[in-house]
Length: 301
Image 1 (tube, rainbow, N blue to C red):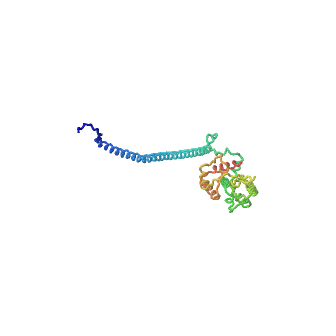
Image 2 (cartoon, rainbow, N blue to C red; image 1 turned 135 degrees about the vertical axis):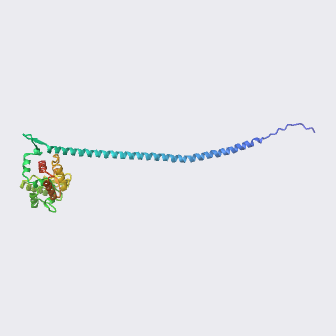
Image 3 (cartoon, one colour; image 1 turned 60 degrees about the vertical axis):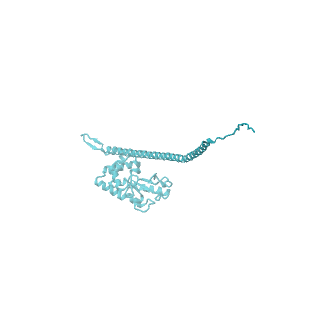
């Protein structure tokens, strides 16, 4: 049997590239791992980014707070400087006013012979006031620059009427003013009677009309008594403060109200003794005392 030559076509699968495929597969696996690893790193990197943003916000808030604090302290410092400047200006005005008063005291009048006499400053007062003060004793003048309470004047524990005790006290100590409290003026009738009797006692001894004032809580019971309602409690002076004021000024500011020209004190006897001693020692002059009294008298007219 003759074999006929045949060509058998065989399908040959070449596995020569299996290694490369394996490598590719292996590479793909490694690439996958790399990609996965890269994704993990990317997620991990997101956490620090959030923290960084929070730190940026906190830094901004801190800087803003510091700037606000510096701004606040700057404003406070400016206000403090402004207040200090106002205080300095006020002190300068006071000094200028005092120097103006001193210049009045230092004025001199030239006589025909060329000599000069010191100006007492009394030319600003009326002749009637000058006459009244010239006839007063030194003790009466001292009491005229003082204001006090009815209790300090009479020595009584509580004064609710102006009777014989008040009359006796006024006769010996004719103070320039009396300041009442609500406990002194029980009602409209008593406040009117007290004011009327007090003025009558002053008139009987020829003393200047007194200044009568009452604290702000007395507004509903003063009526037409003529007692002045005070918006605030008068400043209280110690005996030494009165002496210092009289020694330094001599002349009071004529623009002041009567109650501010008077030296309000609850230590009436101590204040009188201190001023009397200062007059004797020369630290307060008789001229300064007389001028103060004249200013007080004319402020009441």
